[in-house]
Every structure is written in structure tokens, then in C-alpha cells.
Image 1 (cartoon, rainbow, N blue to C red):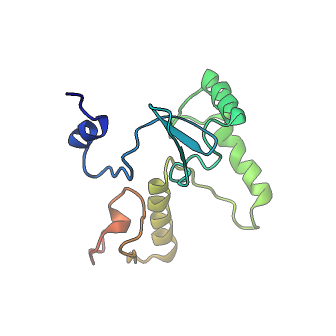
Image 2 (image 1 turned 135 degrees about the vertical axis):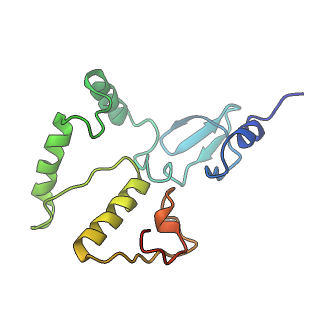
Length: 150
């Protein structure tokens, strides 16, 4: 008896990781995702905002390949040319006074960074989070608590 890969994965993955469909994607191009059987699905999610340029855009693939030949990831350990150049480029197009930037790895990190920035600027610790909305895969903005530390 053949085991369904979705059933196997759902038994082995944490329930904190929510998979919204039963589709097992095998490849994608443009706005379409295909399963192993070749059935195509239109991707209305844009990879939950991470691939809003479409899947496998040739210019993006080239940029990734070019960058990966030099440096794939430096995290917060090293300065590198794109990290130094991007704030300078952004300063040319952002409103006057908006001259400090925070780069993050995900929407969750962006939400956490925004919470830290708000608390630092306002000197207030309280946060209002809407229940039933998606605020990333982190705990703090999704808490239903009055705990001033969160």
C-alpha cells in the first residue's frame, strides 16, 4: 500500500506549521504550481508574499545565481556590498527623515522589529493585536494577554 506523502508529512511535522492545501508542489513557473502528476494550479498566494514576482522568473534566477557565486548568506555577522548599497539607494527614494532601515528574513521578523521600534519610540510597552488575523509565525503579536513583557 502506497503512503500518501501529505499524510506522512502531516504526521511528522509540527502542528505549528500550517499547510493550507493538500497539494504537493513539484515545480512552478510564473503564476502556476504543478504537482508530480502535472496538474497545474494557479497560485493566488504569491508564496504568501515571498514570490510575488512569480515562480522562476528568469531575471530573478540569474540574480540569485550571480549572488550565490560570491556570497549566499552573511546574516548579521558581516557587512557585504548589497547590505551597504541598499540603504543608500533607499535613501534616494524614501521621504525625508525616513533614513534608517531594518532588513529582515521574514514577515515574522518584520513584525517583531516593528514592535521593538514602536516600544522604543513611544516608551510604551502595551501592544494591541487583532485576534483572527495573521501576524506571522511568532508568538508575541498573536498573544491574548495583558502581560507587559509581551
